[in-house]
Image 1 (tube, rainbow, N blue to C red):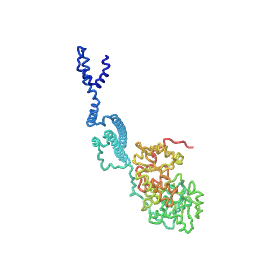
Image 2: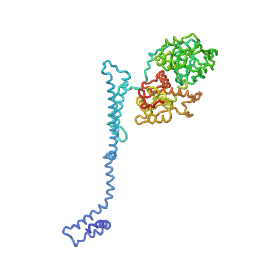
Image 3: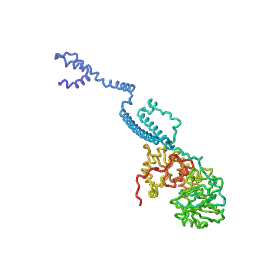
Image 4: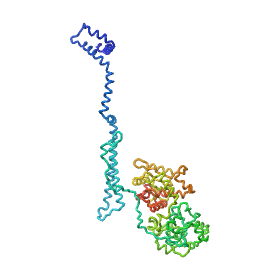
Length: 551
């Protein structure tokens, strides 16, 4: 045992002093055992000692050769990241299962939609229903494509190139009908437009009076005054900026005359010159009798008189309340307001309901050669186009998100039109998905706290949809240079009209229900032909999921 335990030391001696071992090897042993076990063991160790000494050199030679053989014979990339590939495949499969579930739900919805009215043999699907079906089918095709891409993503090669298996999964041909646009431009049916000629007598005037609300209300009032002037064959007098808004800063008044090819509107200053400063309203025939005649209070009458305008006592044409206006016809207006007097006034007609379908048609009820009679000035139009080119691009949604003072206004209505921001965000996302738009222009009076929350919630497929507002004035930006060059910068009415114009030029518009600002945008979109099949009021068809009590 002692001999075995010291074998390492003996090996070292053999290696270090080989010549002594050789001498001993040739000497006869005086004490040999019957089986010569000890001598055999020693002999083997002595003969293979040089081989033990050269192990390191042998390993150094064989290891590189082994690595080269493995490198050229085995896909090294497939040896180590096996667990990573497995995780990626598992993730892809789970994502594909989720998409398949979404596709299944969509197909069930499509099936249920297609069953509407099938019990009625005379059932004819509406254009809106067909559009919904087409949109649903395309959505399912999109889901199917996503599923294919997700499943194939785990089979891509290491350098990201398309594998042979993926190359076999190309999109089939969808035919000419694949280019269906759910949010395409609405057909305005201009061929069915009903119009009247406006051919006024040059010495007969209708003096416009608009007092209710803000600029949008006044523009609607002016548009209705034009209809009345055309029915009564009179020239319309635009109100003075001393008693009303400064219209020439936001509108091209003379453009109305160009659209009709004759003088149909005059400014207050032109009227003053034509009447040689003898400005008298011969008859004050009030369209509305309640809550006060002509819906013009004493303060406004005093302002008119301060301009040198004299007038008789207002006389109601009939009993008419602004809270419950009656539907009136062209014949009603002509029979009650026709007169041989040179100058007449009928008061504020913002709430008047006269031939509403006729008035609201694209381009309005008056025959002319333009798209619309009342539109933003050329300077505002160019500034809006430059802003869109700078910040938005061709495809964008415009959102009129009115909040200031709207909570109380909406909550007295049934149903309320003031939506909690999370609910509003859900409604906006649905329109973004339907319109496939990358950005939203935000026209709002909301506080930063509200718009910040809204921005954080408007997310589609894990990606935030930017909400873009007009930035503060910056001399380095040139999109608004025209306004400042012509002295129109920092004017609240000009900025409001600029907001309207940007919204009217959008691909899709989401409006604030109950807002005349929104209604004027819808009018412009309809008249310009930019109205979309996806245009709607915010959360249209829904009610707020929470409504506060009234005071």
